[in-house]
Length: 167
Image (cartoon, rainbow, N blue to C red; front, side, top):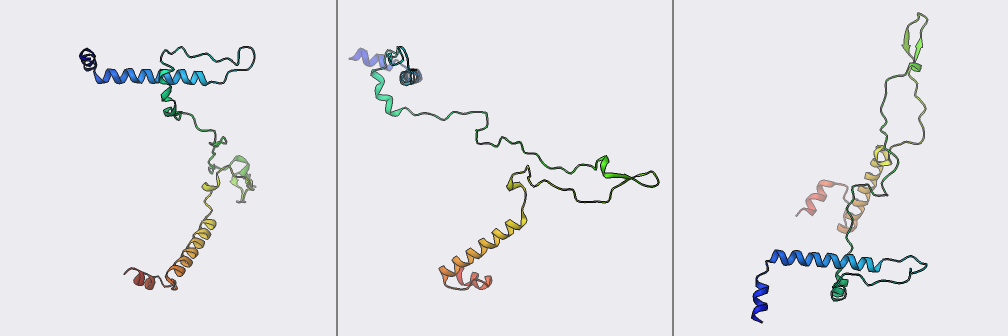
């Protein structure tokens, strides 16, 4: 017994930890290989016992095996596949100029160009001020109603409301 005790004391903690990590990782690889779905057909239904010598002894680790998330440098599939194209005002084209009676090119009188009904920008980037103002007004009205129900007062006069409820 004393010989065994002396032998365990001679191991450094870092060496023991590294050895345990290697054994655990090897068991997990062997277990995943053992649990892979085999193709059907000749010999497809037979599973071989992994060649890891401590496989059966380390089966107690199975409840503690977790699948980790993979870290990837590629974008997830849910990312938009349509490239975002920023609309930039460009300089007038040659078609936008008219040759005057004196032979000089001059810009054509400004007319609004027809725009396509489909924008390549996402809705959040369009900047619809009207819809933002409407949603803010609705939110403010809902907040006022909640305050009236909770405090039982009219909250139209914000100074009075603040004085009453800040005490």
